[in-house]
Image 1 (cartoon, rainbow, N blue to C red):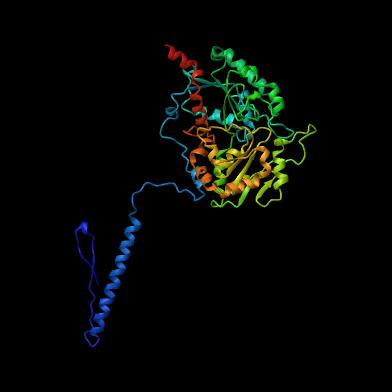
Image 2: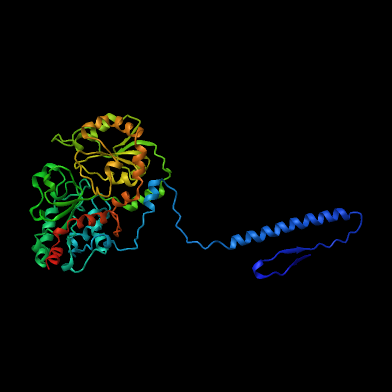
Length: 449
């Protein structure tokens, strides 16, 4: 018979057990032993039951946290990157204000009917426009604006022959937009466009041509020479396509594509590819002019290392190539027609050490991205020594480079998001603009009053 004994509420309860034994014969000692044995077993069982029930039904009151998949260090750094901020982006940008022109749809949104327009490597022109529309630096009062953003998409006209962007219409489209805003507003004329911003996200930026010799011959259009150009093209030497105030920006890589690669990858940080490259590598000159794509750098790589087991070289497209980057220690980033490459961004955000082979390249956001510390630079003339150079890096300071590459602030600085957050690529553009506030007509007028 089990009799619960009443206790105060603060002390819980215990169970007092009483077993009735009607056998008073010669087995009394054995009955006493069984009684004691059974009493302790029963007490232990009931105590364990109540203790387990208490633990199950009384979980600590803790704040729930999102479970983060266990990927590599680089993967976690990107996934844990906050999409929202508790403070205004403009708080760290010296009160910067930008007015975004509301142009007719033929200059921008009509091009979005082709979904590639907002996702290909030139899509920073779309991403920056979208981010500014959602940013707290945007002002609807043009008289308080420091800068004026002119949203013209010029890289979304894809050739029906080869599928590449055809930008032959770029100059006329931008010229038309300028005529429109200068006739309807006073802001362009008062500064000759010096406080107006355009995006030129294709090969040779503000020259608006895909071949360098023609781009150099044409130069920057006269109507843009006083404006600010956000362009992927950047070199450290004198070049006709930099004859306008400009900010070097990274090519566009979709943050969603990177997250998808990280989420579906099963490599657990293991990098079994020593040196990786997938892309155009020509054996023969591009055309009858005798010019080699990539100034023959990629051709030398293919001929020299095509059969080298250390090098994973592929010439054909593969939609899942980001998973190959995630498996690689070194990612080759040779120049194409222009010196920059989307591989620069993809390598960094996927934790692969970029190997930059483009003489004189001016890399984006050098104040936020310590390129010399997270990459390897190889001169174009030394590409034949690539194997030896990378082996030496692997044997000396590879771990140091990789450790710095894991810093989530670096990946953040190279990716454009729909909403600007502190430190991302659009924020880096805005930060660079704060260093050009001397061009702001509004600031100059306020200071003079």
